[in-house]
Image (cartoon, rainbow, N blue to C red; front, side, top):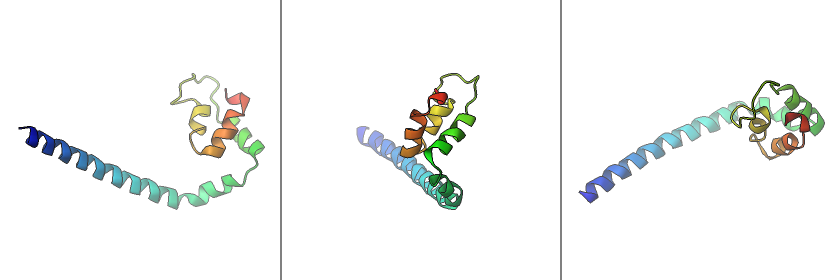
Length: 91
């Protein structure tokens, strides 16, 4: 009984791994296809990036990490995190 339970659990984990692997491939493909959109943003000066961030803020938004622009933007990459954290108007 314990061996059968372990086999069932292992099958579930393997199924979950297959799903996550497929999702990862989809995300990587999406990133590759959209690199031309993101690439110019890497060239923007921090001040300009900060201004873009400020214009994304919803004044009526709550300080909810899921919906707050500052939190969302700070999770994109290390540079965006640095710019977002130092942009006081986001907070």
